[in-house]
Image (cartoon, rainbow, N blue to C red; front, side):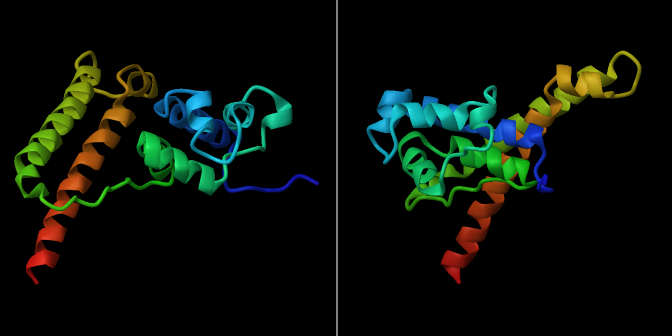
Length: 163
């Protein structure tokens, strides 16, 4: 019996890719293995999408959390995007001066996304699937959305702090 799952084979392979990127963010398998409960080979298995034996073996949440605290939220950002959302780190105390940086980042990333779309439109006034892939439009839009969500979160935090 085949289990009907909400995730596709492609999405599960992408999750394995995120596991590989998270391990890389921790400076490789051996370094990552030194900060969590599993060894380097097991971490490799979590990222192995090519071998049938490991297809349904994924990184447990406690291991992901260990690696996130060491290497940053690499996999979490990707998982949030796959789920249709955005990862929003909370502003750290004393980040009041971050407004200019956050606004600048939102404008820059939004401009980058717009430039990619305009480049795709330039030849025939339309954007097709090949151009979306070629210009990495989805990635640039996701980065712009993340920057705006961080800015929104900062504004909400200021309102909450002043209440």
